[in-house]
Image (cartoon, rainbow, N blue to C red):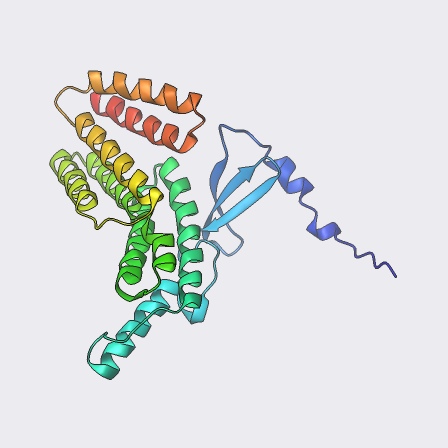
Length: 258
């Protein structure tokens, strides 16, 4: 027997019609019914919604704000009980939960970076860097560990760029330079992983940050020309993440020169 369930109240047609898809205007922050702010993303066939506080999906795993908070509290409890963290280990199931959470935070901070919300980008990337440290310390499975840690160079780069952009908005050029230089040193000193993704991200991130340092140099005009050329290349190659980052850096140069 075929059961037909009325889903009239679930139809998204009106909501989608109120916000037509526009490839140049795909994100917005709105006030939800309870007054909290949420981030929405318009896709060609739908809308995604991200919480701006806590986990992007609004879940509270284990009654905590994040899975990471739960795992860190388990480490603390182990130390209190045994006087050391020796013997503490993340299970495969723990790693899966952490990995899934890291992806959620990645999706959100990438969107926030494109929206120039650098404070939240710094917070979200810091969350994933804490997670990398947890994996490095307590995950004995190379496969589980590398699933997250192989992207650490990229996370360090995004964290540094967010903090540097905030510093530049505050006219703190020296601080911005120090942040980027420290990030370059951090990435270059990372222990090697047998992961093509790690090797690629380390080289790309160091080169990206070195270019950012040139941007902060005494002569901005040549740097802007170079960035425009890189932007054109990124658009041709449909590397939209890179293109968004380059547009932000060009805007920063122009705002400082105005």
